[in-house]
Length: 356
Image 1 (cartoon, rainbow, N blue to C red):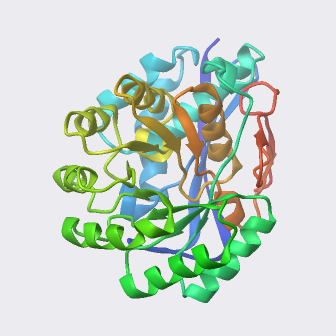
Image 2 (cartoon, one colour):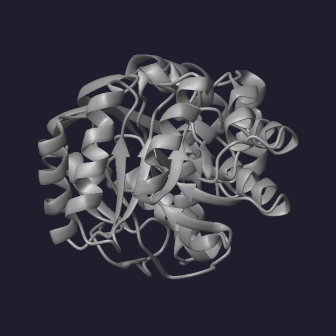
Image 3 (cartoon, helix red, strand yellow):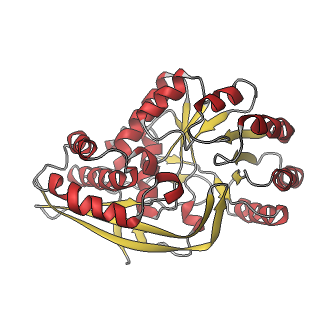
């Protein structure tokens, strides 16, 4: 079996409303769909979902890289040689994790189709369902509470609250949530690099009484020492996100004792293969992982869900982007919702069609 073509297509996903975090605001999602075609008629589907202020990629840069460089190294190759092909991409260019993730996802989709096996079983087959949190972007305290109630009514029991811009307003919102919601609702905070180490410690001390489950990426991504400083001085678990792109980053976080948890995202890691390697480093160090997402359609979200279901030390998920989309053009794959999310048993990703 050989790859005969690689196709790319830019498509826009309209959001229900602008999505604000400490790093910036997304008005819409501009993603890239990738199709890898084989000589026996099978087609693997992948997706790149760049967030320029996180991954430093754009749809244009992704399409150019795939069409001018990755396409020629893939054509004529056997798609089952995933590690070989992903290594070849790294030899062509460093970084560019979203572009590489789209190719990686499409290759693994093909492997599942070739062997007529669901992707989570191709990747290891640990469990066949999972639960996810749901994220609330930065906003006024009353609006955050209103959104939280809507999300809980949809069956979610874990909330991730974006913070990192306005300490007084955000503390007021967190107090409001904890005072008004059922005590069984779990609350996570994500600062998206919005604080410095001393500021982070001060804020964390103030929120400890609100039973916060974890604090995600409190300081700038380059500040591994700051992460370690904070982790050593608080009882709330610290999760690395933007500091964690690669297996090498994971190893550095372990060596510096800078994180209690890893947030793995396919768009940061470069795809499923390297995400599994990051999880393995975490497992060896006794660090559990969560799989998160960018503003992805059901293509990349489904790949991430299969990763969750295939890996024992991935103990949580932050796969809620579908709730932020006004429409999702993808038919098939995983049906994301509150409560337990089952994995489909169809081969590969199980994507049936994409209406674009």
